[in-house]
Amino acid sequence: MLALSALALVCSVAWAKEIPVDEDRAARMYDSGLVHESIMAAKHKTWAKTEASGAMNSAQYPELGYTPCVDGVAAATVSLWSGAMTSPTLLTTPWSWTKKKNIPGDANNSFRCSNADLYHFLAHADLGSSGQGSSSWGWTSEDGREFMAIGQQDGAAFVEISKEGKLVYLGRLPQASTPSIWREIRGYEHYMVIGSEAVGHGIQFFDMTKLLTLDPASPKTFDAIADLAGYFNGLPVGRTHNVVVNQELGYAVSVGAQPRTSACRSGLIFMDLSDLSNITSPGCSGADGYVHDAQCLVYRGPDAKYNGTDICYGYNEDSLTIYDVSNKANAKIISKTSYEGASYTHQGWVLDPMNQEYLLLDDEYDEEEQAGLAADGFPVTYIWDIKSLEAPKQTGYFKAPVRGIDHNQYVIDGLTYQSNYGAGLRVADVSSIPADPTGASVCDVAAFDIYPEDDALPDGGLIDFVGSWSSYGYFKSGFVVINTIERGVFVVKLTSKICT
Ligand SMILES: *[C@@H]1O[C@H](CO)[C@@H](O)[C@H](O)[C@H]1NC(C)=O
Ligand SMILES: *[C@@H]1O[C@H](CO)[C@@H](O)[C@H](O)[C@H]1NC(C)=O
Ligand SMILES: *[C@@H]1O[C@H](CO)[C@@H](O)[C@H](O)[C@H]1NC(C)=O
Image 1 (cartoon, rainbow, N blue to C red):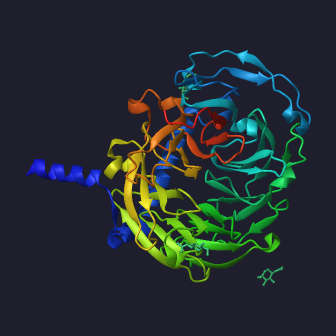
Image 2 (image 1 turned 45 degrees about the vertical axis):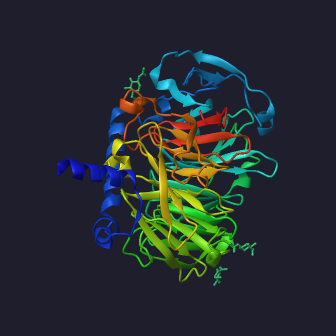
Image 3 (image 1 turned 180 degrees about the vertical axis):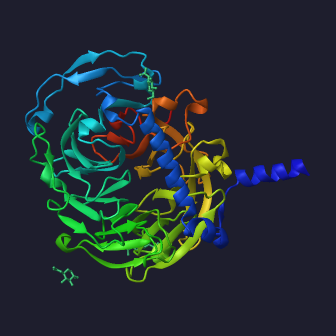
């Protein structure tokens, strides 16, 4: 009997699939905020421990220059740029490096890697902050210059990524109320949309063209409100967990704006961006309660009924919830689907926005909970067939080869760029999914592990909320920018996009 039930468990684990939401469990554990609060508490505990150990003081992490990945390790030497930079025009001239201190064999500056070289690292302290890092997003100017907004506890740091892959600090937009570790950033045209979990913060819209004429010799601190292109102050108490933008239709969405008892139930709160000087909300949807993250797109795909419809894919704690948001004052749920092992449905991205047949979903708590497929602690990415928006199917999954927790991922040209906390940036080729939706043909392309502190642990990683929060891999130059919680910002570049 025992053997049989053990076998049954193995089978159900191996064949994880979509299941209806268990409404009773949802009410008890998710709608109540219980699971979300326990995750936030776990994060606070980890971060307090890191703080107490001194490792959160980013000023101790030295600047690192170009370091190739050799035999699976980028063993950095601490370097300093030897020239004096006085104007942005110098960015096209070659950089030269003088070695300040050679640290071969320093485990804390030796990064496991595969098909990715390090170009530059700068600590948050060197990017104007006294706090830790979170989200980030990039913008490319009309003439091809590449800029980033880096989320930090005390605001957003602005940098230019030089032609040589160096982070050039230009200035910052301070937080608009009190510091918070949770600061999320997305781009909209030439603006950055910045929200925070801090009460009273609101959503900042910053015009990135202001950076074009800044002189890195004297970084500029903007005013948190007066220098904004737009400011949305219509959230229940000013805090939001994340911000989402529909680029094509020109609207933004706040998700996870607490409290859960507010009229919009921390669901989708829409912002009309047609006049940034007067951002108004055409409505909200609390139809499925709290939304943790979302992707809002014009639907293009095989489900003819919804062709051209304005939809949002919601990552709603215990479900993938797909909404028709054509009417912002009365969004409709198209479907709400859970899956075996669902612990905290966190974020996801469609494989191809021009043909929305599949999406990838990450669950932030299944590794920690050792739930379902994630019982062994290797981050699981769930593959969903969304050819029918009304009945999405979970067709398979794939796992990253280093233990850890998966956080944010973005699919760009058939590659998914995942930020797996302590396991760092992991890039997998997911272009095989339409032909093989089981995920068995997904393969690893590249990796850069920005958190050497956990490398000696079994299977190379810690199941904890450390290391990378997000990466931005959309730059034409190929530079991928990784923002980390403790240290600062890494610029890396893939040396191959072919599976290892
Ligand atoms: C590496 O970092 C850890 C954690 O911050 C620290 O305890 C250790 O002393 C560091 N090792 C070196 C060689 O600096
Ligand atoms: C802002 O937009 C709203 C909605 O379109 C409008 O009613 C209001 O008059 C506008 N306010 C200003 C100051 O333009
Ligand atoms: C969706 O609409 C576009 C444009 O109207 C059309 O070209 C396409 O064939 C439609 N697709 C489906 C699946 O109906």
